[in-house]
Amino acid sequence: MTDNPRMTYIDKLAFLTRASETAGSLRNLYLQNNRLTTLDQKTLNFDELTELNLEHNPWMCDCRLQWMTESMQYLLDSPRESQAVMCAAPVEKLGESMKALVHEGYEWPCVPLGDVDPPYPAGSGGLVVATIFLGVLLIGASTLICTYVLYQRSKDHLLSGRTVHYRRAADSDAEGIAHQMEA
Image (cartoon, rainbow, N blue to C red; front, side, top):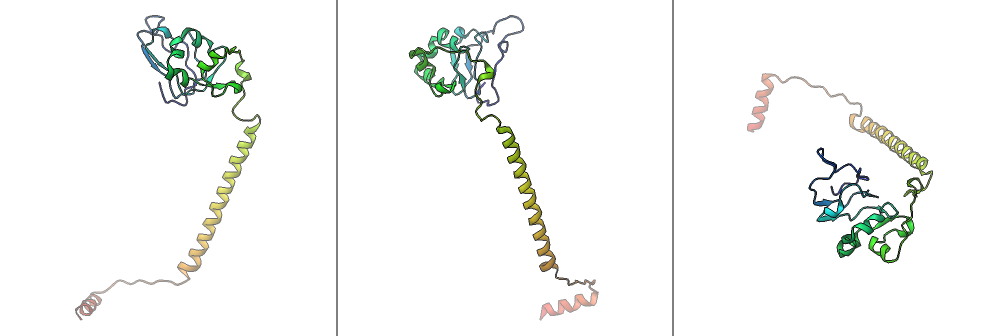
């Protein structure tokens, strides 16, 4: 389940099999390059995995992920994995690895999900809508002006008011043309 920028959450029941309340024989789990911010400890028995890749996700380093540092020691022991699991929030821990947080004695605060700062300023939704509206308006006006100018040019220059008359060629005309071609 990699490279899925729309995947922001995995339900804790996602890996259960129909026959039992376990995740079956899952041994390798690749969750890199998604938009996961948290992962519930009850999603699977992570101790049974032989390979787990969590890198390149915007992890929310709070009490909901503290279990990773306590129960998945191999995550911190592996040089590649421990450096690739980085925090995106809270803001003061942006870009720090989970391994660094453990070594510095990080407290892993519990931040209510509604208190997370959005990646854009509050109230910018109106600005986005106004910008889109203005862009559509400018494109529409430009299209109308260009269409009018091209119409006027074609009317003034190409047609120039002359009428073209056509007539059907007669058999005698064909003989005259053939005679001119021979000469």
